[in-house]
Amino acid sequence: MAAACAGSVELGFAEAAPAWRLRSEQFPSKVGGRPAWLSASGLPGPAELSCALCGRPLAFLLQLYAPLPGRADAFHRGLFLFCCRAPPCCAGLRVFRNQLPRKNDFYSYEPLSEEPPAATGDPVCLQLKSGAHLCRVCGCLGPKTCSRCHRAHYCSKEHQTLDWRSGHKQACTQADNLDNTVPDHNFLFPEFEIVIETEDEITPEVVEKEEESEIIGSMGEAPEEELDSMAKHESREDKVFQKFKTKVALEPEQILRYGRGTAPIWISAENIPQEEDIPDCPCGAKRIFEFQVMPQLLNYLKADRLGRSVDWGVLAVFTCAESCRLGTGYAEEFVWKQEITDTP
Image (tube, rainbow, N blue to C red; front, side, top):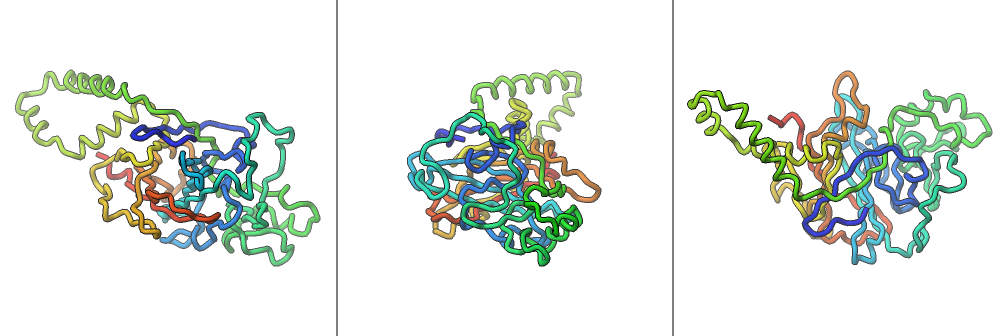
C-alpha cells in the first residue's frame, strides 16, 4: 500500500486472492495464513512471539505493507500483528516493524511483474533465503527440530505435538520432501488479501444528517419531559460511539483504517489511552498512531468456539515516529486493545 497523504485515511478490505499474490516477493498486505516475512533475517523468535499472559505461541493475524515516501531506508516497510487465540486467554497481542532500502539482499531492485508466475502450485516454503527454518504449524521462526527425522522445524513443543498428531507421525520416516505434506493444523486464520481504498471525506455529513432525522422522527411522539431527560443524559460515551458508527456506516466492510500520524476512531469512551499509556520507542522517539483493526475483521476469522475466542472493539497500533533504523531486524512496536464489551 502507498502511505496515506497527511491527514488522510485509507481503508482496508478483505478479499480472496490467489496464493502467489500473498508471497513475500509481492509485498502483500494480508490477513491470516503464515506471515510473508519482509526481511529473511532477524526474525522475532519464539520468546517474542509467545503470549505474555498465557505463554502459548501467538497466531499471525495480519500484516501491512506501509513504506515511507522519501525514506531510503524504509523503501520497503512491513508491520506484522500477532494475537493469542488459545482459550481461555485469547488476549495477548504483539506487533513488529521491519524495513529495508530498495537495494537489499532479499528482493530485486526493479518491481516484479503483476502477472501470475508460470508455476503457482509450489509447496509451502518453510525455509527462507537467509537459511532460517520456519515452524511447520505457524510459519514463524522454528529453532526446534523433530528428534527423529531432524527435518521438521517448530517454534515450540506445543506446535511440534500438534503437527505430530496432524500427520507428521506418519510422514516423519518418509523420504519425500516434508514441505509437500504440511497439513491444515487449524491454527492459522483464513487467508485474505487486504485491498486498500482512500476514505471519502465528504459523505459522513450526509450520513450524520440522515441518522439525526431518523432519531428526531422516532422521538416525535415522546413526552417533553422524556426528551429533556434524554438530552441531559447524553454522554461522551454516546458521542464517541455514534462517531464510530457513522464512520463504519460509510463502508461497513472495512476491516482496517490506516493513517500514520492521524487519530484513531474509538468504539467507546472507556479505555482510551492517554499519552503516558503509549511507551516511547527504545530509540527515544515518541510513538504515533499508524493504523487500527476494526471489529469487522472478526467476521472473516472463523474463530468462534466454545469458551473464549479472539475478540476486540479496536486494535490501535502505534509505531516509532522516526521509524528508526533497524538494519534487517524486526522491532517491536505497541498495540492498544479496546474491548468490544465497552460499547453502549
